[in-house]
Image (cartoon, rainbow, N blue to C red; front, side, top):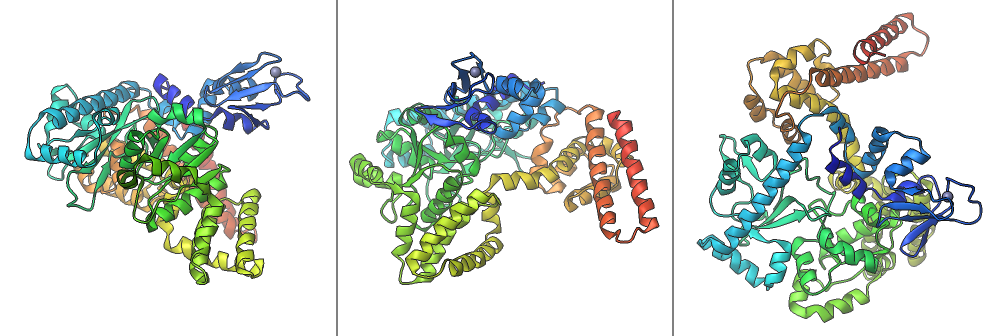
Amino acid sequence: MIPPDVIEDILRRVSIVELISQHITLKKAGHNYKGLCPFHNDRNNPSLSVSDQKGLYHCFSCGAGGNALTFLKEYNKLDFVDSMKVLGDLAGIDVEYYLQNQQDILPLRNKLKTMHQIAQEFYVEQLFTINTPQTELAVRTIKKRKLDKKTIELFGLGFGGVAWDGLFTKLQSAGFKTDEIVLSGLCGKSENNKFYDRFRNRITFPIFDSEGIIVAFGGRIIDDSSNAKYINSPETPLFKKGSLLYGWNLAKDTALELGNVILVEGYMDVIRMFQAGFSTAVAPLGTGLTEDRISFLKHKVDAIILCFDGDNAGQKSTYRSAGIAAKLGVPTKVALLPENEDPDTFLLHQGPNAMAKILDTSIEAEFFILESAKSKLPDSNKFLQDVFEYAIHLEGDSNSPSLHIKTEQFLKKVSEILLVSYGSIELEFSRFKEQFLKFNNNTWENSYTDVETKTNKEFQEEFELLSILIMFPEFADHVASILEPSDFYNEESQEIFRKMLLHPEFTAQDWIISAGNTSLISLTSKWLEAPDIRIIKNYAVSIRIKSLKKKRDLISKQLINSDSQLNAQILEIQTEVIALKREFYHL
Ligand SMILES: [Zn+2]
């Protein structure tokens, strides 16, 4: 079963306009979109109206209508489960996970939400009633930022407390098990098995989903002593990084009404903007602005205004975000702050009127990029560096021809500015791109969630299986009867599984300490109870089949002249695949 709140979450995240425009051409009409209705003979009179804000479609002629689920059922003839899979893909939520893990998910999510609520009450209490030198310093830090009471309450600021395990003890006495508490991300476990509060000694910022439910926290140090100024909750079943915008729960109504959002960089920027009356400010969480978040905004607002820090890093964020937005076809403007100011400090120093002026004079992103790069001329290298950085994100990692046209048009403008041929700019750009990809490999991947999930997906299944085995090592033998360590695609997985077979005496605890891979360890918390043996088998068989197929493809490539020995090997593999499928999938 897919838990009802997950279904809601998926439906909330999916853009119905995006879904329907995969099949039908939709055109913007006011707040809604219009298109030819596919459910009756609607030749010249577009009578289908689609609203992203409401998540609904409706035909004024034939009366067809419903939400994303209804559309998939009526138009694609999909049943509920298959529809949810399609929508889950669009929403970035793994529906398979819920289908395979039938027990305990719903209570678990509810438990996590309750724990976050308790944490919030704890943090607020710490800030306002508990008196310690650190608390005072936290209060002073907030006061120094000139935040008024209403704002502090609206954003739910708190303080993590001074004790190592104040919240941990509170959650424990509220009846939560230690592994549940660690899974929530609110507390961690040190190497010598001590539990600690993650946001201890930090000013806390609750992170809300779009419905205003707390799903994670951010924490800022109370003085400026350390480099790690901000930390966020780790990913949990409630919180996926890059999938939320800070402040969206508060900004959404006004943003939908006004048709724009102001994108700023940090929590404090959002809070300050709200306090100054700019209540459409939102910020990406942690990972920078992802493609996922821009698509999320795409059909909700008519324009994004980028208002990043007036420093080098802010400029880079602007190039990147503007590039991705242009690639996705979202009109974007840039509001330029003076050097060394961010929205927070700028509002503190200059006040709301000056900010309103900056926003009013925001300029179209591509124009901004060309103009600001021009200021670096006659140094054409610096000029090219800037425009290429934008072009790289504009082109993205896709090979879609329409994207290529956008980049081409942009590079043509560049060649006109420099009075050189388009061909030479194109050549320079491809050189630049090669270097950029080589040296910024990480940032490139970070800026594209789809790339991230693609690589993760290959490992996901293996990690799922290993995470079960870490929690329940007694199943390792069973898995070994289906696959060999070398069947794992990921070398790290191979190594862990080999070690498992060598050390049957290792307990879950031993594994958690020695496995080292944090994304693997964070998965283990899903398996508070042993899953059905069929789930374990399914993973093992699927990994084995993939490995066999890979082997087969490899042999096929070697098969230049039909070598009978290799042919025999292929046949053997084919037979095993069929046998495995018959045995385990009853095909
Ligand atoms: Zn119709």
